[in-house]
Length: 75
Image (tube, rainbow, N blue to C red; front, side, top):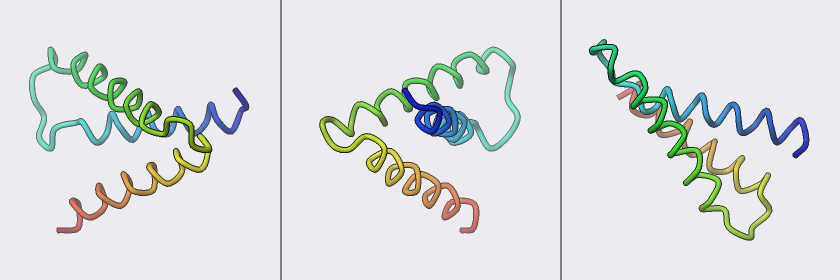
């Protein structure tokens, strides 16, 4: 895995964890569940690319995710 791929996967993991985070502060026991949800989302995110060009697929999916998050925040 190249350094660009590792950076992309780390960025996607961070985005997934932020996306899975609740809007309001909740009890600490859910923190591990948030991390698990984030990791699961990243795994599905990568798995859905299948045999396509992985880097291009992940870039497009990351942009789509960022667009959704920004749309939620702005609306």
